[in-house]
Image (tube, rainbow, N blue to C red; front, side, top):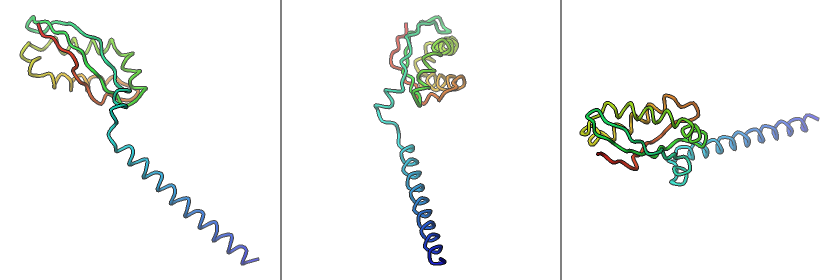
Amino acid sequence: MSKLVKALITSLVILLIAAIAALVVVLNINAEDSDQPPSIDEIVEYSYQSPEITTDLDDGSFVRVQFQIITDGKKAKEEISKRDFQLKNILIKELATMTEEDFKNGLTDLEAQLKTKLNEVMVEGQVTDVYTISKILQ
Protein backbone atom coordinates (compact mmCIF):
# COMPACT_ATOMS: atom_id res chain seq x y z
CA MET A 1 0.00 0.00 0.00
CA SER A 2 2.79 2.44 0.77
CA LYS A 3 4.24 2.03 -2.78
CA LEU A 4 0.84 2.95 -4.16
CA VAL A 5 0.65 6.07 -1.98
CA LYS A 6 4.20 7.10 -2.97
CA ALA A 7 3.38 6.63 -6.66
CA LEU A 8 0.18 8.64 -6.27
CA ILE A 9 1.94 11.50 -4.46
CA THR A 10 4.74 11.51 -7.04
CA SER A 11 2.21 11.63 -9.87
CA LEU A 12 0.35 14.52 -8.21
CA VAL A 13 3.59 16.47 -7.68
CA ILE A 14 4.57 15.97 -11.34
CA LEU A 15 1.13 17.11 -12.50
CA LEU A 16 1.30 20.15 -10.21
CA ILE A 17 4.73 21.13 -11.56
CA ALA A 18 3.50 20.72 -15.15
CA ALA A 19 0.42 22.86 -14.42
CA ILE A 20 2.54 25.62 -12.86
CA ALA A 21 4.94 25.56 -15.84
CA ALA A 22 2.01 25.79 -18.27
CA LEU A 23 0.54 28.70 -16.32
CA VAL A 24 3.85 30.59 -16.38
CA VAL A 25 4.18 30.05 -20.14
CA VAL A 26 0.62 31.27 -20.81
CA LEU A 27 1.06 34.35 -18.62
CA ASN A 28 4.34 35.24 -20.33
CA ILE A 29 2.76 34.95 -23.78
CA ASN A 30 -0.10 37.25 -22.74
CA ALA A 31 2.36 39.74 -21.21
CA GLU A 32 4.39 39.82 -24.44
CA ASP A 33 1.25 40.41 -26.51
CA SER A 34 0.22 43.39 -24.38
CA ASP A 35 3.63 45.02 -24.89
CA GLN A 36 3.12 45.12 -28.65
CA PRO A 37 1.94 48.42 -30.10
CA PRO A 38 -1.55 48.24 -31.60
CA SER A 39 -1.78 47.32 -35.27
CA ILE A 40 -3.13 49.82 -37.78
CA ASP A 41 -6.35 47.79 -37.95
CA GLU A 42 -6.81 48.14 -34.17
CA ILE A 43 -6.06 51.86 -34.36
CA VAL A 44 -8.69 52.33 -37.05
CA GLU A 45 -11.20 50.16 -35.19
CA TYR A 46 -10.80 52.12 -31.94
CA SER A 47 -10.64 55.62 -33.45
CA TYR A 48 -13.34 58.26 -33.49
CA GLN A 49 -13.54 61.07 -36.03
CA SER A 50 -14.82 64.26 -34.47
CA PRO A 51 -17.21 66.50 -36.36
CA GLU A 52 -15.81 69.66 -37.91
CA ILE A 53 -15.93 72.45 -35.37
CA THR A 54 -15.96 76.10 -36.41
CA THR A 55 -15.26 78.74 -33.79
CA ASP A 56 -13.50 82.04 -33.32
CA LEU A 57 -10.08 82.63 -31.81
CA ASP A 58 -9.14 85.29 -29.27
CA ASP A 59 -7.96 87.72 -31.98
CA GLY A 60 -11.18 87.45 -34.03
CA SER A 61 -9.92 84.91 -36.56
CA PHE A 62 -12.07 81.92 -37.37
CA VAL A 63 -10.93 78.31 -37.41
CA ARG A 64 -12.53 75.10 -38.64
CA VAL A 65 -10.85 72.01 -37.22
CA GLN A 66 -11.43 68.26 -37.09
CA PHE A 67 -9.65 65.52 -35.13
CA GLN A 68 -9.15 61.76 -35.23
CA ILE A 69 -9.22 60.53 -31.63
CA ILE A 70 -7.59 57.16 -30.93
CA THR A 71 -8.85 55.23 -27.89
CA ASP A 72 -7.61 52.08 -26.18
CA GLY A 73 -10.67 49.93 -26.84
CA LYS A 74 -14.18 49.50 -28.14
CA LYS A 75 -15.87 50.75 -24.95
CA ALA A 76 -13.70 53.87 -24.92
CA LYS A 77 -14.59 54.59 -28.56
CA GLU A 78 -18.29 54.26 -27.77
CA GLU A 79 -17.91 56.54 -24.77
CA ILE A 80 -16.02 59.24 -26.66
CA SER A 81 -18.72 59.29 -29.33
CA LYS A 82 -21.32 59.86 -26.60
CA ARG A 83 -19.16 62.61 -25.10
CA ASP A 84 -19.18 64.53 -28.38
CA PHE A 85 -20.73 67.57 -26.68
CA GLN A 86 -17.93 67.62 -24.10
CA LEU A 87 -15.35 67.36 -26.86
CA LYS A 88 -16.86 70.41 -28.57
CA ASN A 89 -16.98 72.31 -25.28
CA ILE A 90 -13.33 71.56 -24.51
CA LEU A 91 -12.28 72.63 -28.01
CA ILE A 92 -14.25 75.87 -27.94
CA LYS A 93 -12.77 76.80 -24.56
CA GLU A 94 -9.22 75.98 -25.64
CA LEU A 95 -9.50 77.78 -28.99
CA ALA A 96 -11.13 80.87 -27.46
CA THR A 97 -7.86 81.66 -25.65
CA MET A 98 -5.64 81.20 -28.71
CA THR A 99 -4.60 83.74 -31.30
CA GLU A 100 -3.99 82.99 -34.97
CA GLU A 101 -0.27 82.68 -34.29
CA ASP A 102 -0.85 80.40 -31.28
CA PHE A 103 -3.03 78.17 -33.43
CA LYS A 104 -0.48 77.97 -36.24
CA ASN A 105 2.42 77.17 -33.93
CA GLY A 106 0.64 75.30 -31.13
CA LEU A 107 -1.38 72.61 -32.87
CA THR A 108 0.61 69.85 -31.15
CA ASP A 109 -0.05 71.50 -27.78
CA LEU A 110 -3.75 71.70 -28.61
CA GLU A 111 -3.80 67.97 -29.41
CA ALA A 112 -2.06 67.19 -26.10
CA GLN A 113 -4.47 69.43 -24.16
CA LEU A 114 -7.44 67.79 -25.85
CA LYS A 115 -6.12 64.33 -24.96
CA THR A 116 -5.54 65.32 -21.33
CA LYS A 117 -8.93 66.98 -20.88
CA LEU A 118 -10.79 64.10 -22.53
CA ASN A 119 -9.03 61.56 -20.32
CA GLU A 120 -10.17 63.55 -17.28
CA VAL A 121 -13.83 62.94 -18.19
CA MET A 122 -13.48 59.40 -19.57
CA VAL A 123 -14.75 56.50 -17.46
CA GLU A 124 -14.37 53.51 -19.82
CA GLY A 125 -10.82 53.38 -21.16
CA GLN A 126 -8.81 56.35 -22.29
CA VAL A 127 -7.70 58.43 -25.24
CA THR A 128 -4.25 57.36 -26.41
CA ASP A 129 -3.67 59.83 -29.28
CA VAL A 130 -5.25 62.83 -30.96
CA TYR A 131 -4.48 63.72 -34.58
CA THR A 132 -5.54 66.85 -36.43
CA ILE A 133 -7.04 65.68 -39.72
CA SER A 134 -8.45 68.96 -41.03
CA LYS A 135 -7.87 72.64 -40.26
CA ILE A 136 -8.80 75.87 -41.94
CA LEU A 137 -7.81 79.24 -40.55
CA GLN A 138 -9.55 82.40 -41.78
